[in-house]
Length: 115
Figure 1: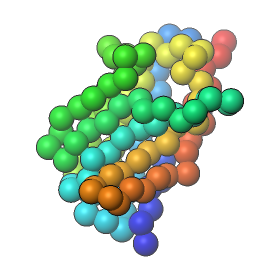
Figure 2: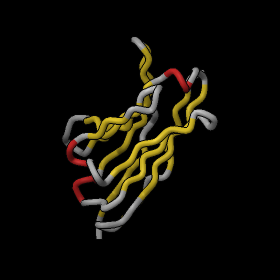
Figure 3: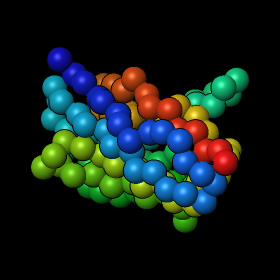
Figure 4: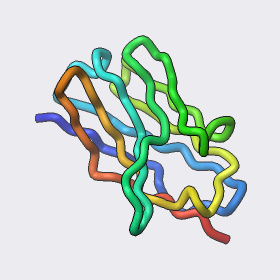
């Protein structure tokens, strides 16, 4: 069955870094656009970054220059390198896979940025 398993979340200090990973299985990973979303308490889920099947990338303005999304098709894994973290980056981060009308979500990983 389809699985998206996020890891790498945790507690970071302001200005610190974390690297999220999302391991995929159960579908042809290389064909799918992969994205990271986040949802803070009381807020709507929002797109953070995306990488297409041909490795084109997109970033939300609020993470440009700080976060980097990448994919490794040999490992069926997508990454989100998060640098210069801010308290407002605190949220549950979700991995998303999309191909035509097929959309899959991971269970999420908590990222907390606090001193």
